[in-house]
Image (tube, rainbow, N blue to C red):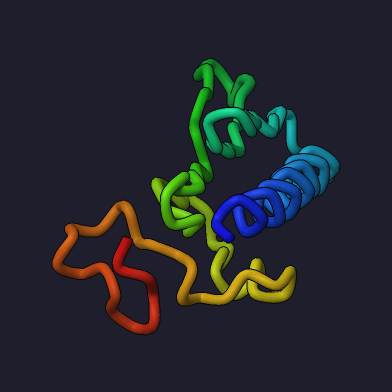
Length: 117
């Protein structure tokens, strides 16, 4: 059922986004803060970068993933990192066919083994 799939993927995304936030925050020489913004009620998962770089204030959403409540598929809303999220999350048991490239136009969904919706 979609409910079990959603519950499973929620746990994975929470663990994964929190791990990324911790790893990025612990890099030497980096003054920026990385926060995991997690909303399991509405299935939104973000990695946010913030802090000061010289005289410029930084506040950027690096990663934004949503879980669709009807299909249980994970929608890529944004990925401003070098991380191939579908490849890394496949190691946690989420197949590529359960990802939707939400930042691409709908006619491109389903390409290269990704989900349509």
